[in-house]
Image (cartoon, rainbow, N blue to C red; front, top):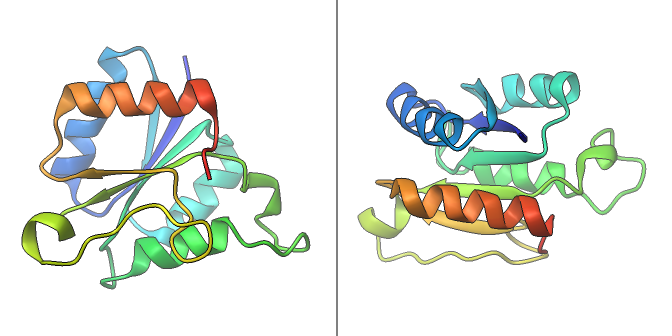
Length: 135
């Protein structure tokens, strides 16, 4: 059983993700903001982070991913940079913008579009947990 931290401000999405992952045998924690997520990260030391793109700002998830993957070894979050990040986004269905993992600009390991397909979510989570950080 893995510990998974969901950082998303939409309670409906959090509930849907939680139910899927708990049914797959994972222990799930959630935070509704980046700041709350950083606090919980240090408390629970999750095996995987599921991160929303848009929370209190349109790019809050991107900014948090950059903080988590800072290349600075003195970063207060350096001890957590190995944790895989799965990013959830509705941007691909609501805009013409397309994003993908990028080591320098968008340092996440995988993307899943909203609305979330439960089977794909569990499959992607299990793959990331088995292989660790991809980027």
